[in-house]
Image 1 (tube, one colour):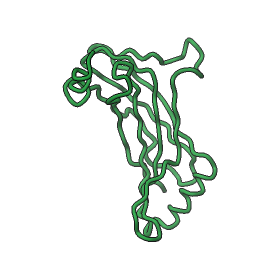
Image 2 (cartoon, one colour):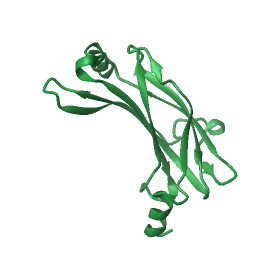
Image 3 (tube, one colour):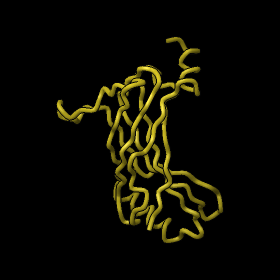
Image 4 (spheres, one colour):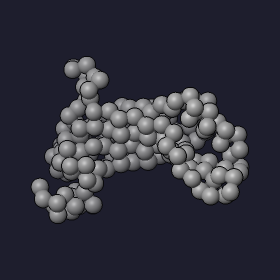
Length: 154
């Protein structure tokens, strides 16, 4: 597949779609992770070779400037799975969707940072966003599809 074909395919025409089947979108601020399930559908035959999940905090600092900080990330390419449970490579086609269950967890210092922002949520205008990107073999890392969900902290 040439570059033009890749662009045409992944910028809208026949692009794979990702949907959340389940996501922990409301969690206590002291929780350190998010679990999610996704389904990837496509009109063309594709191969999922990895997942990149991240949590980012979008907030205003003391000067009122909007900042974005990645507070957690997780990459999964199947290397840590036992053979009979490994979801990779994930085959996707018009007749076969691909499902994946994943999670993203924060380190202690990032969790403490998030709790500090939450304590000042009126001033910081904190938003936490879960982003999940599917690494598709056929794109050569160009135009990999992704999905985002805002997480509510309580």
